[in-house]
Structures are given as C-alpha cells and as structure tokens.
Amino acid sequence: MKQLTKAEEEVMQILWGLKEANVAAIVDEFPKPKPAYNTVSTIVRILESKGFVNYRKEGRGHIYFPAMEKETYSNLTINKLMDNYFQGSFKSMVSFFVKTNKVSTKELGEILEQINKEEKK
Image 1 (cartoon, rainbow, N blue to C red):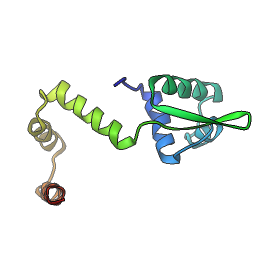
Image 2 (tube, rainbow, N blue to C red):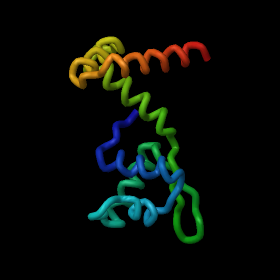
Image 3 (cartoon, rainbow, N blue to C red):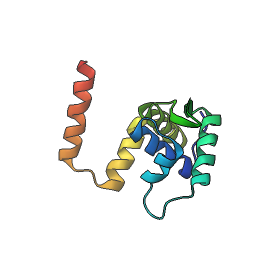
Image 4 (tube, rainbow, N blue to C red):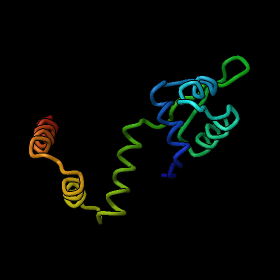
C-alpha cells in the first residue's frame, strides 16, 4: 500500500465524510484559509493515481469518490505502525499507549468489554 501524505490524508478524510464530491465541494469543506482549487485538484489526481480515489464523469466535470474504505486504510495504517514501532506486537503497542496516555482502569475495562463483544460475534 502506498503511504498518504498529510495533505492527501486531509483530502481523503473529507471524501470519506462526503462519500462523493467534485473538487469545489472538497475545497468548501476545508477550514479557512482554504487551499487553492488547483492544489486540491492536483492532490485528488495524485490520490487517483495511487488508487485511493475513483471518479465518474458528470457533465463537463468529475465526481470523485473513495476507492478504499476508511476502515480498511485505518487498519493498514495501524498495522504498519505496530510493525514499525512495536515489532508487530499488539500487546506492546497497547502497553505503550496505556503508559504514555495515562489510560484509566475504567477505559481499559470498556476496551475489554468491546473486545469480548467482538469475540462473541
């Protein structure tokens, strides 16, 4: 999987939220100061070449939509993080977050409840 730059990820976050949009609608979703239309258009074309975005013709323009689900990208990114920084160990990664982010026992209990629900499915 190709890695997304920060700017590409920002555009993808917007597209995942909108489901589909033209470049102008994507630009409208950015906070002020908004990036230039041409900048966003270039990023969208790069995302298309990387396989993250598809489009369909509509009139004289294009409507863009994600080619990859947000959940799929999140999973791939987290697994890469785990492999690169925690030697592929989920336990080491969770332990790191517990130590550095001061996760409460209540939060850990809620996480365990969620895990148990998922295992029962």
